[in-house]
Length: 249
Image 1 (cartoon, helix red, strand yellow):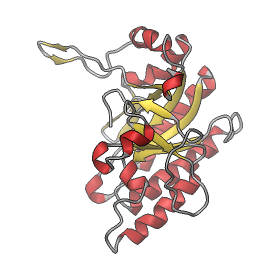
Image 2 (tube, rainbow, N blue to C red):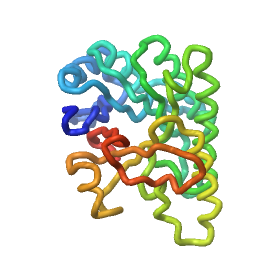
Image 3 (tube, one colour):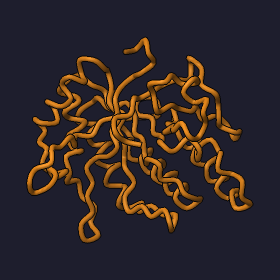
Image 4 (tube, rainbow, N blue to C red):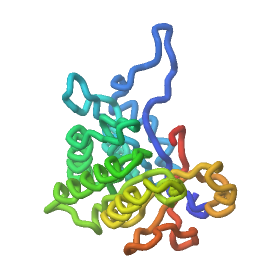
C-alpha cells in the first residue's frame, strides 16, 4: 500500500454485531479479540491511528475503562506501529470548552503505553474539537502537558506530539467574522506547539479539489507547522502522510 501513499488505517475495535438486547458494549472487547481484529491489518499496513485510549468518565472521575485501552498492546502483538490518539473529554462545542483534567487521563495512559510497548510513534491530542479560542488553548495546554510527561524517556524526535482537527478550521477557512481574530491567534499558538505533522480531517464539501490533491481514496492529510505564517500548504510528495479513515470523521 505504500505506493498509494496510504500509511495505515484508523482503527477502533467496535465492529458489532447488535444482539437482541442491543449493541455489544464498548468495554467488552478483550485484548485477544482486539489482537484478532488487527491481525489482518498487520499483514497489509505498518501503522494504525487510534481515536482514544479508553477513557470513560463516571461521576466526575475519568478512568481507563473501554476497550480502546488494548489498541496499542494488540498492535504490538501483530507488529504494528501506532499513532496514538488522545480523545478530548468533557467537550462542549456550545461553550467552547474541553475538560483538560479529564483528558489528561488519556495522555497519561498513552505515554505509559508508549513506554511499556515501544510501538507508539506519536501522540495526537484531540479530534475535531476546536470551536473557538478556549478549546484551542485547551488542546495547546494538553500538548504542553504531554511534552512534560514524556520526559525523560522520549523527546520530540522519538515521540512527537501533535493534534488532529478539521481541515476548514486548521486551514482558516472559517474566518469571515470579526470575532475570528482571537481564534486565529489561538490557532497560531496551537500550530507552533505541534511537532512533526499536524493532521487534518478532510471532507469533500470543504474544497472540491481536495480529492485530486491528496488521492481519491484518502480522507486525511497533514500539515507541517512552520513559523507564524498561514500554515496552510498544498500537499506534495514530501508533505503527504495519509491514513485511510475507517468509519470516523
